[in-house]
Length: 333
Image (spheres, rainbow, N blue to C red):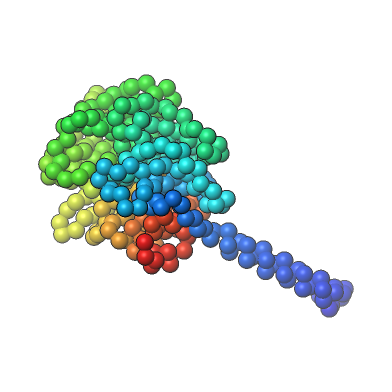
């Protein structure tokens, strides 16, 4: 075979080069093809992805357990290595209750015995407990500078919102609110618009879950939304679902201004993915992904839970399966 410069190259060499070319492109096509099934008869109830790696923090519980009062086990799945690190610690199964640090290697999660921090590179070695608690913790959040940590602590007939120094765990401020909500509590959303302000979904009214602003410096509390279904932190803004008629509305808070994104009929939950690059929406038998750079909702599916990896690969959850293939949503649990 003649090349353009007139030199010859053997047919075998051409075939080898073609095979290598096709193989490299085939591998690239499969690089984002992920699938992992959690063993032990468990189902995934919530998940959030790392901002830097193909790492997923999942909460799973035994299939058949009731969501109300059930416990879930936090674990990290490394999708690239198809490996899971289960820490053998119990947490509430009501919602996510975890947040990744910006380095993408460390994740904080709330449990029945306080808040722990796990290093994904250490596998199943015992994670470090950074906050001890006699009550179950919910809705953990960390400020953008990672200097402050906030979470709910459930007491007998009240919920306590706690803000601590993230490095030393020293208490900075707390608020105790009565639990008056007439239904099962879910979400427990918390977000930091800045270091001295916390937004939180509260449960001190029988009907509705008001979103309130908590001033860390003064202790002042202010109602800013009558009924908030969910709250999550994006890359540069905070997103929440307002329970309004005729349909719930997705809104965002940026630079102190509130902007309406769209109607989100059938969705009542939000979860942060990949450090806030995306927000996962979920409801009964439906889920979708919000791109926080464009505020567009896409990747809609019939799976009840979704997430997005930092490389833009969507993950779908059905029962114990976590997969990049949307066809998993069609399988019976």
